[in-house]
Length: 434
Image (tube, rainbow, N blue to C red; front, side):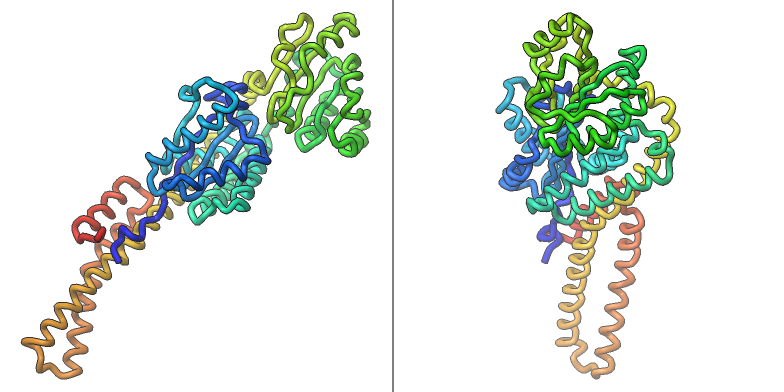
């Protein structure tokens, strides 16, 4: 069997967008609801060149990670896939917002995402949990194979190394802490302000703790599942509010923070306009940090009302980056080292069938020539002499193979292009693609 028939789908591609390449409204138009991810992954199965896939969709990024037998074709199919999904919600083009990574650059990108080096807030811990969540969703959908299984588990290990070997995690700030920092800038003080927190999930819990540490004493908590609101409010000495009743309590709130996973607008401009009249035009601030925007952008057009979304937190987050730059540099070094190891493993997937095919080809030649000689001029050799001839020709073949095989293995991962060139040359020179 030729090496060509053992072709491994080893091209890794990432196509997507993040908080740097696209504003929040564009990211939202491409985002995948959790309930739709499995269906979307199944749609990707229909593309012949995409053998494995994982979809990652958070408030800061939407990306498709794939393993393919044809990287160029797969990247075009993935762009079209995102554009088609986007077109259901908007007619605008994605061309200026989408990025594509191939091969070792794709590996590096995913490792940086896992290690929180590509996050808006460097070192924030939430992204690793989200990465694991979407990887498991793809596993359940059956779209993860050898390549992405290894890639994602390696990315989890890289994140662990970065956390253990650098100070990024110990100095990390979360989106929630950045939101509280912004609130402190908005108000001179927080201890005399009333805050309404919409959402009592993981983000809401983290947000509540940061608000308490920031000096907030009066905190209302609402959630679709009222028990969760009661539970969180109990832990922070806050007041639980029934979800259907929260609009009536908005008049009490100086600061409203949305951190739900809901894709819908929960507070519109008409409601805020009414609430503001009831508050006698006393200023209100809204901070929207959920996975999707929960507050109508038109709220910002109302006098005495100020709305900030997750993209507005960038400036605060960037100020925190400078003090962690040396730790980030160490983390980048770890990522680069791990990329080289992973690239070496990927390269070995192509080496094994090529080396096997080369051995088979030389063995076929050796056997044919032995049969011809033993059936002709060397017909009279004894059994012992035949065995000696067999051993000698086998040893010659192994010696001939030793140098090139050692050279290929030694260079694996050091220079992907050079190693690929060696493999391609072997296939061509020994006609292994047959």
